[in-house]
Each structure stands twice: as C-alpha cells, then as structure tokens.
Length: 106
Length: 80
Figure (cartoon, each protein chain N blue to C red):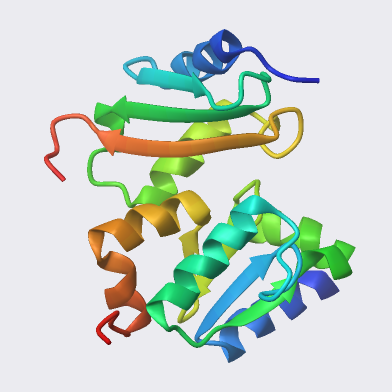
C-alpha cells in the first residue's frame, strides 16, 4: 500500500537475515538493539541491519508491518522472529542457532 | 510518564484473565520492567503470538508510555 511498506517488504525479501534496529551494528543506539547484535554476532550469523533512526517512515511502518510495538525486530528468511527478548530465549534454547543455520562451534 | 507495576498487571489480567503475572522493576525507576506472564491461553502459540497478546493487552502503551518491558511468556501446563 504505502511506499514504506513496499520498502520493508523488499528488505525482508532480499535479505535472509535482517535486523531492524536503532543505530548500526557497530554503534547500536539502544540497549535492546545492542543485545540483538551481540546475539547475532555470537552465532556468527551473516546479517543485514536497517537503522530505523535514519528513516522515520520505516521506523513507524515496521511496527504496523510486524504488529510489534518495539525495535529491534528480527526477520529470518522472510519470517518475523521477534524482538530481543525472544531472540535471547531462542538463543538460550538453541532454537536460534538452528534457525539461522549456523553453529557456535569453534 | 512512568507506569506503575500494578497498572501493567491490571491491564494484562483484564484481557488475559487467567494470567499469572510477575513483574520486576529492574531499576526502581518505574520505567524499566521485566514481566513474566503465564497463561493457558498461550498453549500452542508461537512466542511471537504470545508476546503480541501481551502487547495487545497493554494497548498502545508499549514503546510509548511504557518504555522498556522485558517480556517472558509461557503456556501453563506445557513443559518447555
């Protein structure tokens, strides 16, 4: 419908793992986004990030798109996984490793 | 404007009547909470849906009036 929705859909479609976050992987601007990044890095996952602070349309749009009120938001292979709490729970149970298709070995 | 823990609990119970709600004020500032919500109504739902039910119970407050709520959900009776 809107331009922001199209852009969000395209970002999710064209990246296997994409994290909508505040700031960048190198300089997260919020503790929850920082936690999400450290989980992905720990898994050795290859991911894209979208800094919602640089794009107000995406910042508001992603909340409606996912029906989720907060940032960060993780998408894997086109599916909404959740925010940093769910990422942490899934990391601790081993489900996230399985989902992103990497191992923590080595 | 911070929100009282009792208000968070009330809102969750209002829309998920059987919910067991445990809330911790992480910094004692009325603004950073952790909540654990256990309900039979979560059975069979993926985590994302369970959390969405809690966020729906909080209306539009999450991410606005309520700045930070670490959320953990579980279905009662499911050993997982």
